Amino acid sequence: MPFALELPSEYGYVLTVASASFFVNLYHSTLTSLARRDSGLKYPIPYATEEQAAKSPAAYKFNCAQRAHGNFVENFGPFLGALLISGLRFPTVGAAVGAAWVFGRALYARGYVAQGPPGRMMGFGIFLLSDVALKVMSVWTGVQMILESRA
Image (cartoon, rainbow, N blue to C red):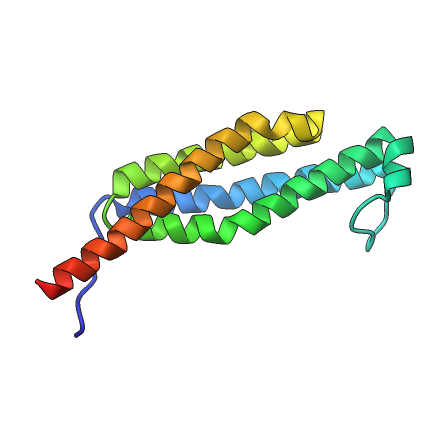
């Protein structure tokens, strides 16, 4: 049975947060590019070897930047999906939680690159809580839509 999907008038907040998240990817790319330049590792080398990282703080920093960016990319698609779905029913809350995710991911990148793996933990906590909240709201949005279609 077809249904019409109406976007809430506040959905612009959701789209603004989604768009802001693109700049976190740019931030990661910049951190990684600068760390690659400083390490002297040339393309297509994806990571410094364990030996290179042990000898060179710049190579170790490059590995941290590269891993932080990889983790962002791994989580980016599910975040966008959860944000866009949850925003259908909870546009202002979804946008606020999504903004926290964006902030947490930027903090994660900064901390990981500056201090290594321990430096990522504050940003990790913020984005993880935000991520779980968005996914729960997304599931609830789907359940509500199913229940309404049966009424």
